[in-house]
Amino acid sequence: MQFDILTIFPEMFASYLNESIIKRARKNKIIKINFHNIRDFATDKHKTVDDRPYGGGPGMVMKIEPLYRCLKSIKKKRQSKTYLLSAPGIFFNQQTAAKLSHLSQVTLICGRYEGVDARIKKYIDGEISVGPYVLTGGELPALTVIDAVTRLLPGVLGDNQSSKDESFTTSKKFKEHPHYTRPEKFNSQSVPKTLLSGNHSKIAAWRKKMSKS
Image (cartoon, rainbow, N blue to C red; front, top):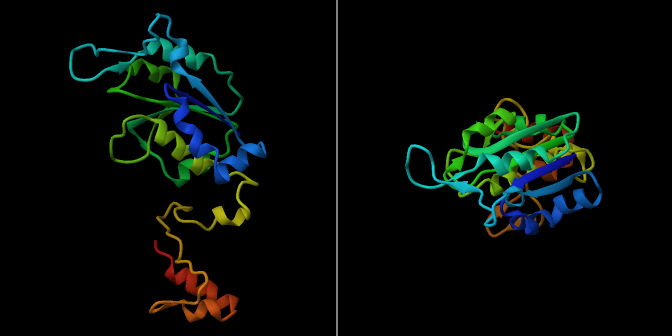
């Protein structure tokens, strides 16, 4: 799967994407992540990517021209979708991540400043928000989408069943059962006896009971 990220701060991604599961997925060529610096597509000597909003008001707005040129420079695959990461977008959830995991390419536009020139909507498939709050830019949401989608791809996790038994994997707001590991006793807390019984049917029933929906 290929991710194409449009941003003015591509260096922000390095530390997270070069660690742990995402690093292994990239090394094993399960995913490919391309970064496109929007400033490279500005034509003035200052590489300007923002300007004052028409109608007045605070803040600056990302310009349509460099953003459009950047977007058009990306070679699209057959199963490809493009999304703007923005606070007013549709909330991202596990079901959305599952749908995106079946694509061959996901392009994510990281907004900045007060917002993005609304004319970009003609060239995208939708807008995604990672929650009911405002962030400085779309870089953290992009990392969230990459992480959530990547771990659903075959071969990324050590056991493919891991991603099927997790919280929010169904349309109901299912939350996974509690987990325990060694030591068996810690301070005044002990691991539930059922989990130590070796009885798989009882363990399965306990886990189902302890899951929240």
